Image (tube, rainbow, N blue to C red; front, side, top):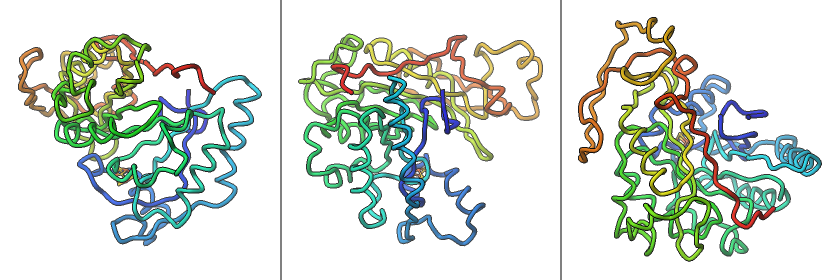
Length: 320
Ligand code: SF4
C-alpha cells in the first residue's frame, strides 16, 4: 500500500511545513512533536506562538513526480497531507497554504487527503476557486470522542467538498454518529435515517454526508487503549449506513475477547494488563470494562473480529 509512508491508507505523505500546536486530546502524544524535538532540538516548532518551518523546493517537487508516475501507470495515488502540521493552522508560513492548493491543482492524478483538527478555520482558508470542492481533494477531520464528533462533524458537513471523511484515531471513547442529529446540515445527520439508509456508493449530492470512516487505536510510548466495543460500534454504524469503513489498527494494546492469533494469545503478558471502561450509553454493546494487554502495534495487528476492514470511498463520477 504505502510507497513512502508507513500509514496503511495512503501511498504518500506530504508536509508543506513542519510545526503545529496541540488542540485536541488526540494531540497528547503527538509523534510529530516528538520527532521534531528529537531531530531538531530547540527548534520550537510547536505551540500557538511558535513559527512553522516550510519545507524546501525539492520536497515540494515530489508530488509532481508522483503525479507523473500515477499518470503513466494509469492509477491514482492517495497523498496524506499533513502528518507533521495542520493545513488549516493559523500559523502556517506566509503563502504556503496558497502554494499547496496550487500544487494540488497541478497534480490531478493524485487524491489529496487533507486531514485537519481545525475544520472551523477551513471555510476562510480555502482558495477562492474552491467552489463545491476540488475533484481530487478529500477533506477529513480527526474525531476521537463524542464531544469532538458533536462539535466538528457539523462543520465538516457544512463545507463544500467532494469527499468528506473521519479519522477516528486514536479512538478514545464511544462515538454514536447518529447523535449528531439535528445539529448538522439538513438531510444527513439532521435525519439519522439518512445515515442509516444511504446506499453504499450512491450518494445523492443534495444530501451531504460522510463518505469514509477510518478507526484505529493509539500506538507509541504513552498509547491509550481502545475498548473493542467502540470499534465494533463504528463498524456496525458504517455497515448500516453503507459507508466504507477501514479498521487501521488496534495500536499498542489488544483486548481480551477479540479474535487474535493463538501464539499471541498464549504470549499475552499479564503484567501489562489494564482495564478500559466503556461509558457508551446505549446497550447494544457491552458496557463492561475490557481487559487490555500491551503487545505492540505490530503484534496487535488490524483484524477486527477476525476480519480485515479495508473500505475506501468510490470517487463519485469517476473524476480524474
Ligand atoms: S494537530 Fe496533529 S500535528 Fe498538530 S499537534 Fe495535534 S497531533 Fe500533532
